[in-house]
Image (tube, rainbow, N blue to C red; front, side, top):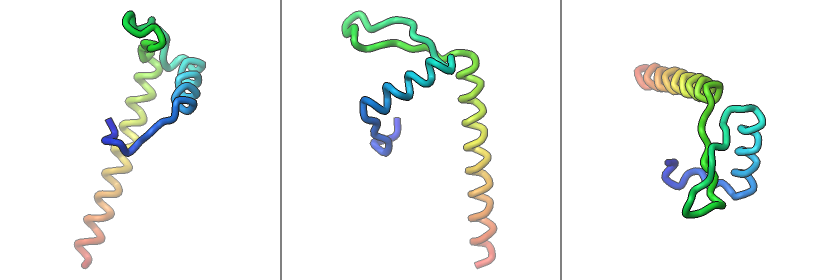
Length: 76
């Protein structure tokens, strides 16, 4: 998804999953039948709401940054 820009170590990933579970932003729904070590999670309604908020926040930052660049380049 990140084209190799983001690389998570196993410990980091497990820590994040643990936090998301504790905040009830995701829930464990099962495991892969072919590989029982692979867990399957589902995003909760609160998780979806938080994700939507974060996407909106990042889009706003991108729009403001793009406007600043456009304003700056128009001065030059």
